[in-house]
Amino acid sequence: MTKKPKGLLIDITRCIGCNACADACKEVHGFPSQREGELSATALTIVKDREERHVRRLCMHCEEPACASACPVGALHKTALGPVLYDADKCIGCRYCMLACAYSVPRYQWTKLAPFVKKCDMCADRQAQGKPTACAEACPVEATVFGDREELLKEAQRRLLADSKYVQRIYGSDEAGGTSVLFISDVPFEKLGFPPKIGKQPRNVMAAAALAEVPPVVLLGGGLLASLYWITQRRQAVAVEEAKERGERS
Image (cartoon, rainbow, N blue to C red; front, side):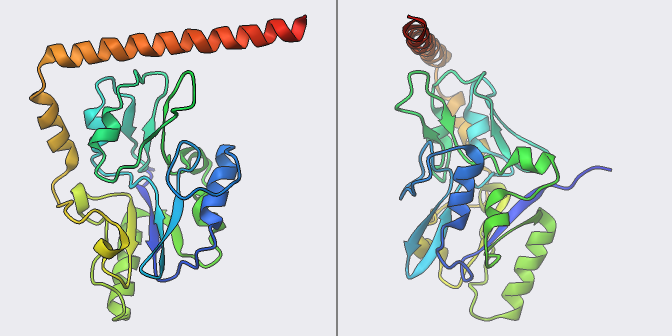
């Protein structure tokens, strides 16, 4: 039986700012436990305070992701279950995905000798095991809920109709063609730091159109330079590891 696309419903009115979601994300990915104020290569989701509300930031996992469309080597792709995944083995370090993302989500490992892009993967490995995302499982008040995207849309609509406190909008239902991460709130989303002019058109169309205007020689040159940079940095990383091994043996 075909599995339905999954997603997250984040109810900003229920979030208590405990950061259990961010802590669980760090734990499951093996990142340092200290809390961070902005998305980074070691903080794939954070909780920011805006308008006396606690607002999560993470990859929106767009239905038609601009990051994947902008990537010239297919290092990013949308899966049938919902997550937008990154393949470090294909990445050439061009960082077009960072420029294409309307939500400014992808982060680069600037401190690494062989840097890669890092972003939320919606716990794809856990999903493959039939588990919810770590953030949803950790939330003590069900401010973040994991489930089938279509069912989450219905639940969000039910809450909006049942309580007049909510802004009558499900953010992510059709923004940029729709996302797998959905938000509802009692404060207008623009006041909470959400991009104000996303629109309904999928961003991948705009990203593809923009890349089409770039002369092929520029793309080729950029790709070659990125590849050379990656190879150089990779060699340095290997050299460092070999030096460490020689030091340990001596």
